[in-house]
Image (cartoon, rainbow, N blue to C red; front, side, top):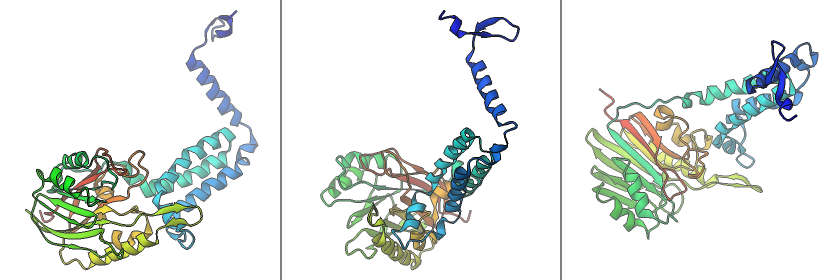
Length: 349
């Protein structure tokens, strides 16, 4: 009797064990025939259609979402790529609901998302470049700073920036990085290590009252490069206040002014900006520089949080240099992933 439960009629009138492929074909057949002759397929799914159109609208006009209330616009832009996850959900719901109009409507947010982020899905990395740079927010509470320093140094970066350096751990980082880097400087809670000589090292005032940004001239074989290291103030998402980023925005404007006044034609910015390239509040910085990840990376390059990266808030940006490749480095004991890039300084050749 148990075996009979698994017997079915075959095409030639016999019987035999039912194959999984046959079940799938019958299921697909029932789904397709269920749409035929059903006039309601064009009337069902009004809510799904509205949600699809709303999703497309949010992505299309994200730059116009106001920041007046809880910095809602910046919050949306920080996690904008993740809105794409709603597209397959709406697609499945539209198919289950048997709504033709909902399925057609889902095409609109899909097209908008691909227009915004489709270019990041391809590998744009090249093999050239003459300067490798890296940056890492090491986390002030890092339990093993020596291992973290060794890990990021293994990237082979010519110039390495570290942020969130507690004074007590600076000697540990200096000792661990000394074999690979002859030159270094620490200003406040940020530091810069270089294989090439550095001059004109100074703090950059980002309107905080303490030092979390610096600038140095690095004498590379291709000529001088102005290297900025910055750790902009953190942002918080609070129920009562929304996306609190006022101090971060003020510091971003100050950093943008400093970069605009930079006399050297070649500039590299390394650091934790606590914001993505999509966030309009960082325009004072992002409007002047190119993201190495956007220009020459593979994928989104999310760097935070390290346990499940959801946003790229650790940035490498350049001016007067050509990005060749950009990538994230292996995880350390920090809550951020290190990021690295290779750029071409000799753009005349």
